[in-house]
Amino acid sequence: MLAAFHEKEPLAAGLFREAIREKLFRYLPAEIYNGVLASLEAGGKIVADREVVRLAGHKAELSPEEKKVTDTIKALFRDAGVEPPKLDEALTRASNGMPITETRKLFQMILKAGDVVKVTDEMYFAAEVIDRLKASVRGYADMTPDRVIDVPKFKEIAGVSRKYAIPLLEYFDRERVTVRAGDKRVVLK
Image 1 (tube, rainbow, N blue to C red):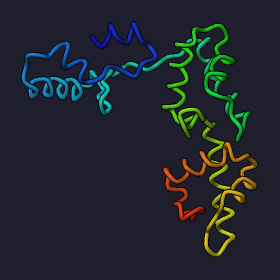
Image 2 (image 1 turned 30 degrees about the vertical axis):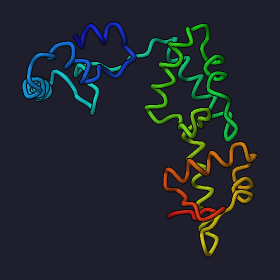
Image 3 (image 1 turned 135 degrees about the vertical axis):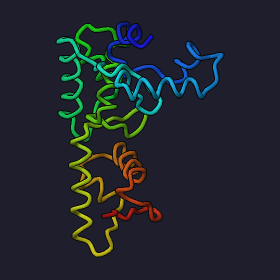
């Protein structure tokens, strides 16, 4: 089942555990299913990564065309800096004639690998851009007695408009780079 899946979907990480259970072990106790998976994993035949199961030897191998598209996507977000393109626009520009559904799969691989960071459903940034911005914000905070930053100062440091500043600050809040304190933020160490 896994070999057929990898043949059909070479870029997918693997099959969900529940899909395997439902297809092959539906009428058997969960203990048998778990035991079979544990035995196959101990024998080096499969790798169970959280909810996804794959053959041990499976790696998503990109064709030269797919590699070119992924490199283009990364470059688009990296070169855009703190004002990235909309996702659909970037994928269309990078697709190089590839169906957009395939381009989206490649983007998901890039996202999962951490090369691009999701700030909102509509806004994605190159990871290196986010890292530089975090360093700039922390550098600014290190020079202040209270480590507080407000939106206008963040806009100045980042070189962005409010359109980007607010989602970025909210992302930093979620990532524990900052913590909200009224209409300002305290930059954490």
